[in-house]
Image 1 (tube, rainbow, N blue to C red):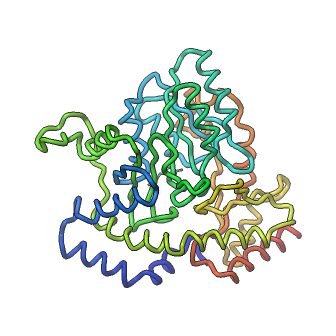
Image 2 (image 1 turned 135 degrees about the horizontal axis):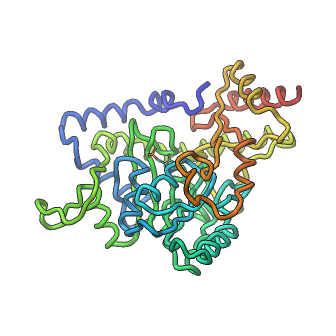
Image 3 (image 1 turned 90 degrees about the vertical axis):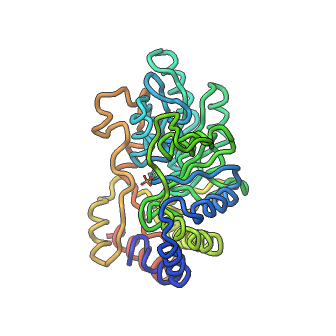
Length: 378
Ligand SMILES: *Cc1c(COP(=O)(O)O)cnc(C)c1O
């Protein structure tokens, strides 16, 4: 059994993907070919925003957004403590100070009340200027944007949605990657919508930011005069080949893959109910795209022993994430959190992510669940 079965997906989509690769390679427009713009239009339409600017990966996407906003030295950017490293790496890379905030114990996402407390503390201390919030749609579930947006408005902060894991999720029908003033996603192969290498995208309704972002992806090039570079930018583009691969993958994602992962998640939750394990909570009106199906083990359960016992049965599992952001070595000497992150610290000790992808069979899910129940019973 695979944790995320990309081979099965390729077998299912082989004719379309092979044709797309063949066309991209034979037309030889490897950089900024027509497939890139076609994909951007498809993605913007799917998400429901005006602009989509693709780029080289989900990390660059975050850096591009922060750069477009002019965020840098002296600025505080609030980031959940429980996330992938990039969410905090990018604010630090542009010179700002990431301030890590604890998360909700059931949704794994940024806790809006604790966010407000941290903003107040940073304002009181006066060393950094609060500028932006990076809200992460962790494991596929959109963050609580109603509450987070209200806090951002109260303190006049920009809201960046890190939707690297959230693409396809929604709140009351409104799609993930449309909630931030700018939103970003990643097409890393294992993400809900993945390509065959690295890729990413930035989304916004704001025309000015969109043209700034597009310029930044191509060495700060002027929109009118292609020989004039009017700002310092990056070289961060999505390859034509990756765009070509993503088009049929987006078709499948829309047609059935998103439904399939939701069916798989429902089966997991049904089969693991009443076991004493804490199962993922999807609030009313929210839809997850299930980048991960993550359970919480009782604190007295030996996680490493469970992982090894599952592995012996051929079941892969992963720990996302083992270390809180504020404890990462890179942030050792910074004022990385202004309040305790007790929930994150506990989650890092108790979480376990199970195999999850659209091609998982019901029999696989039964086998995983029965194995877990047997092992933790011993
Ligand atoms: C994967 C991920 C990123 C970075 O995406 P890359 O394409 O790997 O650079 C950023 N944020 C989160 C939450 C992620 O999961």
